[in-house]
Length: 159
Image (cartoon, rainbow, N blue to C red; front, side, top):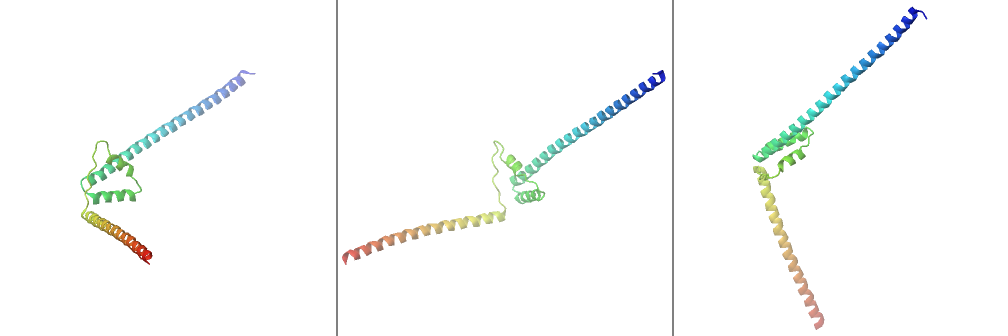
């Protein structure tokens, strides 16, 4: 083999090797970029998840603050807006409402709610009175039934 052909063959091998190394370096750089992008995406997802959790907690605390201060119309309106947006904060509100050592806030009713509760209480009292009257009538009916049977027995034995 002549020196020129040898140099040409070595040059081709070196060129192929450089191309292969360049391709490997390009692939490594692409993999590094993709890994960095994946890491950034994961960090963004984690950050957004933490922010969402924090915002859900803030809204739950706001609902409880409205209820605690007697602003039930505002709390109800906020709950409806949250539900209309497709969010369910029941768990967050429940978690914050029953913290260890915290006494539940006494419910303050709006005038309309208080009127409804009063109507309900009066209806329950009337129902209780009606039940008592029905039980009394049942006892009277049973006593009359016993008296009528005895009278029928006395008449039957006298005849």
